[in-house]
Amino acid sequence: MPFSPEKISALAPDEETLKRAEKISDTAKWSTAAFDGNFVWGSVKGSALEDYSVIISLEPLNFNCDCLVKLKVCKHSLALLMMYAHSNLQSTEMPEKVFAWASKNIKNIQSDNPTKTESSSESAIKEKKKNERLELMRSGIEDLEKWLYDIMAQGLANVAHSNPRFWENSAARFKDSKLSKVAYTIREIADEFNYKVSDYQKIAIKIGELSLLVNTAKNIEHLGAENQEELLNQLGRLVRKNEVIAADHVIRDLWTVIGQSEQYTLDGLIERRVWLLGNKSLQVALILDFLFQGDFDLKFTVGESFESELYFYPSTLWQRALVNSPEINFSRQPLQYESFKDYEAFFEDYARKISINPWLAVETGIIENLRIFIKSDKPYLADQNLAFFPIRNISSSSLLKLLAISASEPMTYVVTYDNRAFEILSYIHEGSICAL
Image (tube, rainbow, N blue to C red):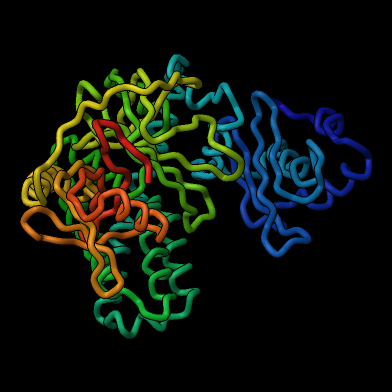
């Protein structure tokens, strides 16, 4: 959509706002300013400590700025639109927080419309961008191998005292190479070093995962098509909603919510995880949503069920999925499920899945005959064979509730496992899923 000076002026709420916008419509005054198809975004220094974040949808025209001025179109939004109109912005891949805002606020996202036909020139441009991203990723992998070598040569005890800027610059470097998950992992490592008592085992695992990625990427041509796709996912390739739907990895079932959690990411986004279980397929699905601010459109409640199609992201193991519907109808239904009798059975299945997807970070399952006990003020889950593992991320109130309900008797729990500990998502009582 063309934006003439007259059209931009007409959007201004008053003459003073327009003049202020013109003063800051210079890319040198913005820390970031870019566009991708239908969306323009940027960050600019304001009166607050942190930069103001601006997002614009071009079709339909919509503005979002987190500055303190409560105008539909503020000076920052106008300035960013001016820079876009003068072709002063670089085309780049849409960041996660922009996509999250667009998914929530714009009903007809052009880039997410699977019915939109593409011209040959548009297809050629997309293919060119894809090849450019792959080339950047290859270069980033070579850089990552050298980076890991330097880290291990220094030793974890020495790099623990590195300047925070070292970690920030390293993460930014790999993000520029389109290795967003690598960048995030480096930030997680840096965050762990910030604790007074760093968990060196956790840090070593993260470094090991990065090393596995490097070695696999160096041999990508020897992988099958599915494993190549999975590797790109693990490196940080952004898979958009329209691509997931077009892949047609779909299961229609009666889905029951078996767990839910929310937390803030290192990027300041709200991350929501919703675990679902198909009553017929017995497929476990993970709905992973990100939100910059506000509330999620779809609300989920542990124990409730809904009939729907789920579209699964391309992977060697189907796990992450999305609901392609603005509304779903919930009800209470009897739960159909399969469970493991003990840890041995659970880990046999886990080992089978790891052999298919070595990057499987978290496994979900239902395990019977588990008891909670406290040892050295820390909670553990023990099975009928007295094998036990620590419980992570459980509040004191939830722990007391489960101890009171179980009365030291074995119970059936819905859990996730992350290579080190179990997290309790919910428990099963009289055939129904119950929230903590």
